[in-house]
Image (cartoon, rainbow, N blue to C red; front, top):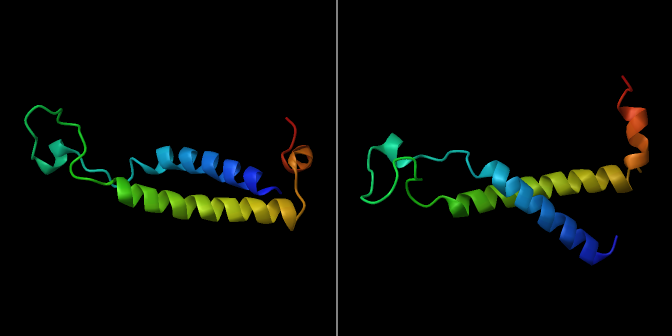
Length: 88
């Protein structure tokens, strides 16, 4: 695989996982009962972006390495999906 393909695939997977990971362990101002004047009660309390970025990178790396192993070492491809997924 070319390095540009690897980088582009990892980048797209990273952004997808980021939006899946972002809401985990998010505390709102309403839950903490410290609402800042001029914000909505459902706004996040405190910064949590760096934690989300670290978890996203970890999860994305595990998913990418797993997918890479399936493709390269077990030689699975999209053509094998009909054999894996049963037809209704």
